[in-house]
Amino acid sequence: MENKSSQVRQRAAGSARAADNGAAASGAAADSRRSSRSARTDSVWRRPISARWILPALCVFYTCIFVQVRIRDAWLPSPKKISETAPSEFIEEHARGHLHEMLKSGARMTGNRANEIDTPLYLLRALENINRNRASTTVNGFVMEVDVQRPTG
Image: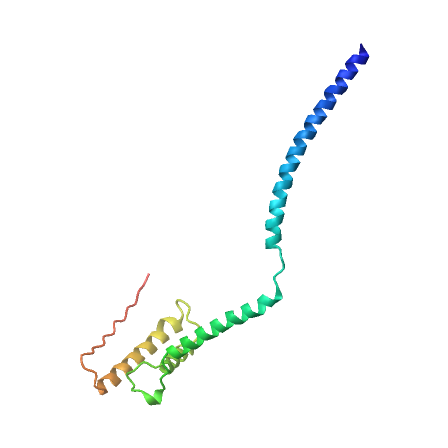
């Protein structure tokens, strides 16, 4: 009797192994199909880039940028010189000079003398000079008012 029961156990274990092997085989087949698809897509993305495309692509890219910069540079007007313009016109050299004069007073932290006294006085003097120069030129209908605000709190 023991012999029959051990045979039954062996058959049951063998059929369970066969069932497991069948499931594993079907899963392995599905995995192999997935892996072959992913291997194909991975191989497309992991292919080394050919050196024959890099140099022409870079040349085209930098040529486009160079052309764009040249077009933008030619589009801008030429800078005005102090000697070529009237004193009432805006010139970058004047603005930069005013900026350097304001920076001579030092760091302009809140509550500092340079920020609270020196810079506003310089700006008021510069505006008075502009107003005097404007009065000497023929600019009609232009009125300049200066309103100084001193916020506290």
